[in-house]
Image (cartoon, rainbow, N blue to C red; front, side):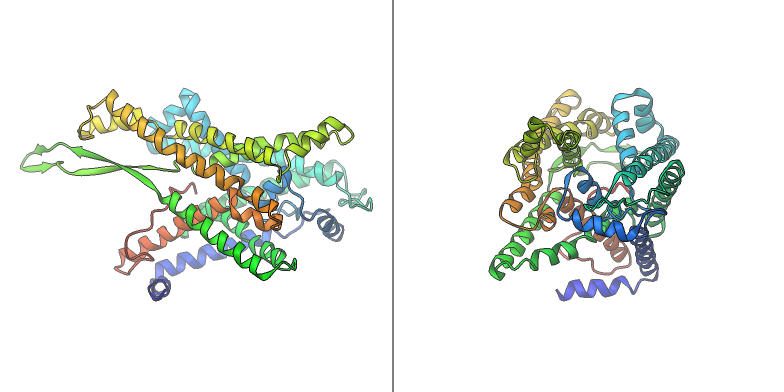
Length: 446
C-alpha cells in the first residue's frame, strides 16, 4: 500500500503528467455538467416527478441511460453522450470486414486511410446524432407524469421544439466527440473510453446508497460487498489473461550487422472481443421488450414480456448463448490468423515446430478457438450475474455493477488509464503502480 501511495504522489511531481491529469479532470467535469443541463422547453419540475415514478425501471432506455451517466433520463443537452460516435465506429468497423473499399482503407491505406475512416466516422456520428435527437424530441413530447402532466408543455410542443432539440443534441454530441479527442491528445489518453467510464461510475454512489438504505441485515451487505470485490478481481484477471505463442526470427546479415535470431511472442488474449459481445447481445435482447411495449393490451405479448424480464432465467439462458456466439463472431472479424501468418512470413519469423504459411495459420486459429471458449463462457457468466443478484434481492441499480457491460468497461478503462500513467512514471525512472511488472491494459478505442 505504501508503494501505491508513493506512486500516486509521484504522479504530481512530473509537471507534464500533472497537467495532463488536471486537463482530463477539467474535461470530465464539463461532461458531467452537461449531463444535468436540461434541454430548453422541458419542464424540469415535472421531469423530476416523472423520474421519481420511473425509479427502478430498466429496458432499452435504461441500458442507454447507463452509458450516458443518467443524461438521457435527465433530458439533458448531453442526452446521447458519446454513443452516436460509438455506434458509427462499430458500423465502419463491421463495414471494413464485408466491403472491399473500407477493408482496403483499413489494411493498405496507412495514415491516409485511417484519416478517411475517421472522417467518415465523424460524418456518420452527425447523421446518427441528428436522427436520434429527433427521436428524443418526439419521445419527450409524448411523456407525461402518472397524473397526466406533460413534461413538455403543450404550448412549447411542435416542429420548432423538435428542430431545436435535434440541433442542440447533435451539437452536444459533436462537442463530446471533440472533448474525447482532446483528452486523448492533451490528457491521459483513451478520451472516448473515459467519457463512458465517468458516466457509468457516476451512478455508483447513488446505487450504493440505495442498496445500503433498504434496511437489509449488515452481514448480508458485507457478503455482497465481498462478492463484488471477488467478481471484480476475476474480471481483472481474465481481462489481462493472454496465451503467448513464441515466434523465432531467423538471423539476417546486413552489411556488418546481424539482425534477428531472437524469440518474441504473439499475445492472444483470452477475451479478444472485449465488451462488444455483451453490447451486441444486450441490444438484441431488448428488442422483444421494446416490441411488447406497443401492445399493452395483448395477452400473448405481455406473457412474452415476462420471459424477457431482467430477472427471468429464460432471459439469462438466451442472453448467455448469444454472448458466446457473438464472442466467436466478433473475434473472427477483428483477428485474422491469415494476416498474422503472412506478416510473420514476410519478416522471416516462424513458430518453432510449425511450418510457415497455412500450417501456421491453422495453428494460431486452433489456439484462438480454444482460448475463446473459456473467455466467452466467462463473459456469459459475468453478463448474467446481475440477473441472479436481483433474484437474491439486491437492489436492481446496484446489481448492475456485479457484471455485465458496466463492470467490464470500468475494469478495462481503469487498466488502460493506469497503464498510461505508469508509462509516464517509468519513462522518468519512477516506480509504477505494480513493481512486479507493468499493467497490461486493453488497446483503447478512444
